[in-house]
Image (cartoon, rainbow, N blue to C red; front, side, top):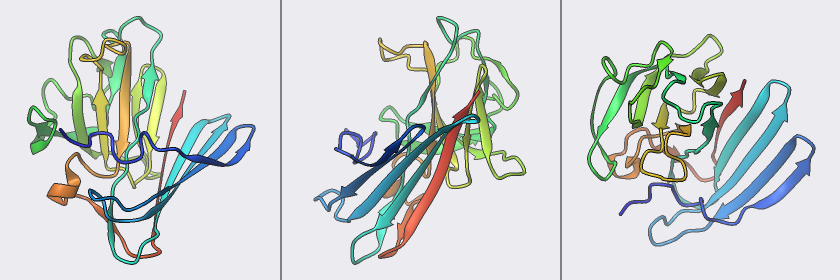
Length: 211
């Protein structure tokens, strides 16, 4: 009973550019009763020797200010059959507390069972948590790591959702989703870290994966 995966997950995107190691997809999000705003969206994927880079751009194509938030849902594969023995690094000092609908109700320190600021095995920890207060390197990027795979986010993404997939039989504990988000769940209702785009204004954010 919520829009957990956003407004464009099942939308048809057009391939605007395509060549070896590079593709650009575009989509126009037209106003709807639930989201009466227009956005011109562009997703650019670049695969190079240093890994995959994804750049997401959103331009307000309407005539009034539009609230905006974005997220991605990459699963990071592991060599083991299960993630239990895989080391996880999440450079976050805070985790959001949620109710049974996945809606945030507060926040707390990660200290204790959800502290992955130093790499350690996931063990039997069940993860479906939104982390924030990300520690960043000198280049402004925050870097999470699952085994030998690193997911980085630039400063446009202050939240990481980490999910071990336990409720999903096809996914359960065979990989770890590390999901960049510009805002927390339920942000359009709470207002927390919602980006407000003025007409013609563009928001750009990049994330990537390397090994």
